[in-house]
Each structure stands twice: as C-alpha cells, then as structure tokens.
Image (cartoon, rainbow, N blue to C red; front, side, top):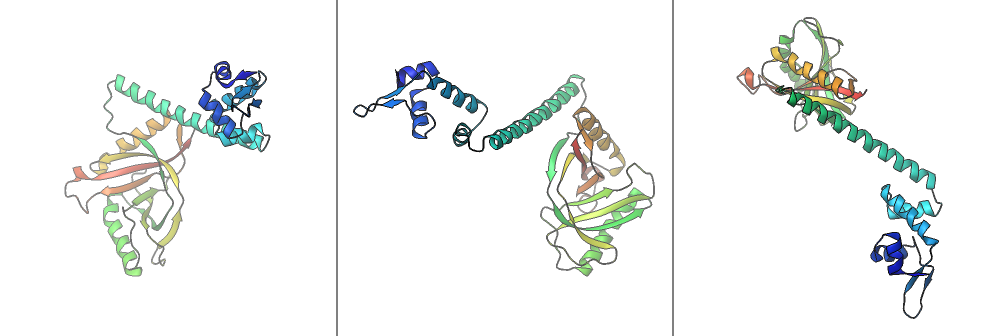
Length: 269
C-alpha cells in the first residue's frame, strides 16, 4: 500500500489531482484511515490511473472518462471524440496549406494584390431577378431598375443591414455577351413576387472570398487569383460565382474607388 504522496510520485501526478479524482469518484483509494483520513493506494491502481491519464491526453473531459471507464456509452463517446479530432486535423492541414502557399508567394517576390479567405455566408431571404444581359456594362443600369420594381410592389420590404447585394453567374464559363445572371438582394422578410422578381431562401454556403478594388474591366485578375488559390490549397468550386457589390457607381464617383467582393462557393477537393 502507498500513501497518497508516494502514489503520486509513482503515477507522476500531483496529490491535488489524486484528491480530485477521489472526489469525483474516478479513482477511489483502496483504503482511507478513518482516524487520520490518510488515503492509501495499491500498485494495481496504477493501471487505472494510466488509463485516466491516457484518456485525458486524448482530450476527454472528466465526466466523459467516468462514462468510458464505467462502461456507459463508451462506443458513442469514443466515436464522437474521433470525429472531433478528425475535424481538428483537417482544419490544421488546411491552415498549413494556406501558410505554405503564402510563404511560397512571398519567397517568389510575388505581390499579393488579392488576399483570399474562406468564410461562411449564412442563409438569407433574397429578392431575385434572373435574365440574360447583352454585356456586363448593362448591369449598372439594370440593378436600379430591379430595385425600383421591388420597391413599387413591396414598399414594406427592407434590405438587411449591412446590405448584401450580389450577382450570381449561371453560364458556368466566362462569356463576352449574352450573359445569364441573377441579381439578388438580401431582405429582412419575403414579399410578393411581381414582374419577374421572386422572393426565395438562399441556403448557407462556404465561399472563397477576395476583394477587388477598381473598375469592373479588370476584375478578371481577381477571379484568376481565387482559382489559383483554390488549386494550391485543396479546394474546388461548388457553385456559381457571386459578385457582391460594396461600393460602386451609386456611392463613389471615381471607378478606382469601387469595391467588389468575389465569392466562389467551395468544397474540399
């Protein structure tokens, strides 16, 4: 039999830890002196302590260890932790790939005009207008027209704050003319469909995002940067590209001040 101090040295844990394990019923001393309160442990209890420590190093909580060592829901708890660790591993691998890409670009002396981040766009209600436009330049005149249609038919409908207005491209490839687009504006509540405008729910989506500052004629460089980044970081496109308009002709006189966010829905390759 070993007193608690001796047992703590054998098990390489503190006396405080052993007392705590006793309090929660995880590792009860083999014997406790009723007069002095001294705790005594047996050599055989070292294996139990080792199991507890091993499970702690796997990231299990004390209540979970109590369940596992008590034979209650053991398989479910272990599988849950396994899934959590797999998710953490994937997240770390993702960060490592991004870091390698960033370092390689820096070492090659490449000025990264476009920084790419992956983020989650929450589900939202939008009014939507889908059409084919002759050229990209027609967007700037079409968007106010669509907004006016919605306001006339649904004066009670309000845009979200901050606003989220975007164009989704449905062609699946770059086109010089006759471009299939969908204008979407996030709103706080649905309204009445009218004159080609429909209200619908957009699901949540994970996107690779970058910001393009300047006129739309040079926005192709932003798309090229995003797709190069996807290839280098283990992602692949999973939906129609979106352009979210933050600043534009409606609030900035100089085209060099326009700000557009490119959003490419993605999934892990």
